[in-house]
Image 1: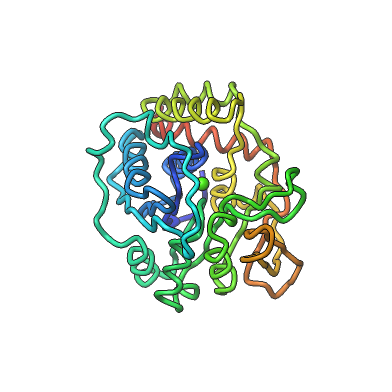
Image 2: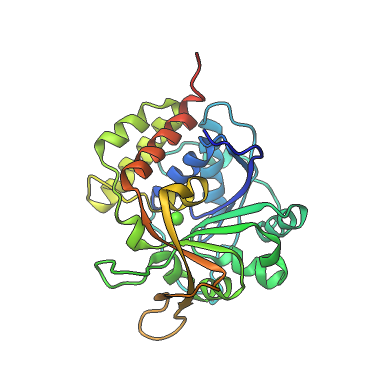
Amino acid sequence: VSNRTRPLHVIFDTDIGSDVDDALALALLLGSPEVELLGITSVYGDTLLRARIASRLIALAAGQRAIPCIPGSQDTLTGRDIWWAGHEGSTMDDLQTEPTRDESAIGFLIRHAGDRQDLHVISTAPLTNLARAIQADPGLPQRVASLTVMGGAFGPTGDGRPEHNFASDPEAADIVIRSGIPLVLTGLEITRQLTMAQSEVDQITAAGPLGAALGREIDQWWKFNGEQWNVPHDPVAVLTLLTPELFSFEPKALEVDVAGAAPGTSRAASDPSASSRVVTGLDTSRVAEAIVERIIRAGTGPARG
Ligand SMILES: [Ca+2]
């Protein structure tokens, strides 16, 4: 349990529904007592469906209040093709009954940054909503406490391809990186140091209705990939905000390619004066434990007795 005296005010910006890791990241946030989740903004493709998926998972969590789920940008800044797995929402019945908030996601981000100097935004998706919010309100980067991002690749990743979130909307990543927003980036070379396999999934699936729903989402994602494991990219990035003591960070100047052979390709160079920090290492076993522990807490509620 954190020794913070005030809650962390968080907005979670997500492409939940495709890769299961956004759902795991949302559950992790719901199981984190130090977090006050102000809202979920969805992005990339069918964002109404994505907001409904988030709403369903929140409703299944133990003891949760209503948290607004707001459909955000469907298209990317330059109209690049949307990657859509096709299975989004298919493990959940009657999703059209889930409430979403009829408000601009970009306006929601700007409004909360204006209300509070202590807003922490977490993005585990293409950065379209954030880029549009910065375009609409160029003072936004100075009014948020931090922006935590799963995105980019800053070391060997094995396959030589740019990371999905940056590659899906590189122009948006470029705008965010250049904005001076206090950015903490977790790249693929960090997240790929962890995998979730059957033993973790068995524990999660046993954790109440939320755990069961996550179990179905994990199973669907494994079948889609033909694997018996997945990489929890987005939960790892969320933990860089909640448990920074489990990570090492370095200030780095960042670049992302918006043209050329592989748009979305990113680079980072050490720069003590940079406003951005890149995660350079992690305690893999403690991060893995924290992910499972917090997701279970979201499903079952705080320990009693
Ligand atoms: Ca994601």
